[in-house]
Length: 173
Picture (cartoon, helix red, strand yellow):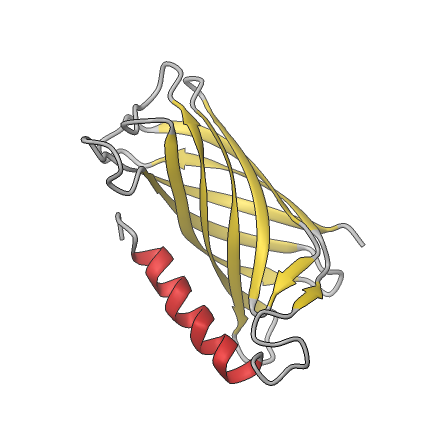
């Protein structure tokens, strides 16, 4: 899944969820609602595919604003060679029945600075990915995430990098 697959799956699943569960609301399909804000921290590694294997830390803030089935997110990642990514975008999550297990897809355009690390072809880079995790009784989430970053073909060269991380997410309410 080293392309726009996560973004496409999120769009299809989110639109299906919107049509089935949100369009009957008084505010319409993309009704603005509140959710519990969260702050997430994760650490992991860029996978050695095109780039050298390297450590990365990532912080994400999910404000309380939702639009229909879609949440909002702001993220910042820093790599060990000075790579920096800053972006904002949408999330879509689901539960596995009534269990504490969940999945989440996200897509976030942003600004990328390579530093001394891997060059993604230009300063605009899209981050999309999948998170699978467990939410405890107090709202803390523990998850494994897989992210892909690339420029989505807007520059001549479109290399991409993937990261695998362990994430802890804390509710702020």
